[in-house]
Image 1 (tube, rainbow, N blue to C red):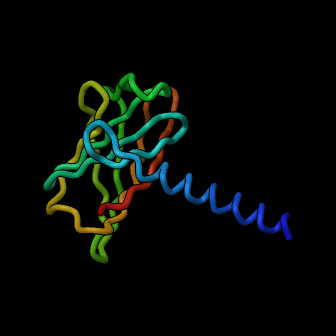
Image 2 (image 1 turned 90 degrees about the vertical axis):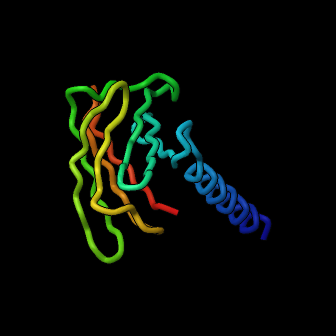
Length: 124
């Protein structure tokens, strides 16, 4: 019985830890997901979307100049792909035809020095 209770509590602790980690906010007010050691922050303001990429230390910017990025968005029953442009020092930016709705799903993918990154976000 104690074994089952211990396993259940351990599972709940892991689940709550993962939920808390996924809800982390970045310096720019967006949701942060860590992929391949790189924190990736997603910010949507109006029709502009921005992804900020940091190095493994979580503080230094990852250079994006000369690299490519893309976002695939599911929002309101439609799917759109947005080509992202690199912007100094560590951003990928894109424009939408209309602002994102709540619960839109955004999949970011990009190539940066030494890595191919992919991260998933859901708008509030």
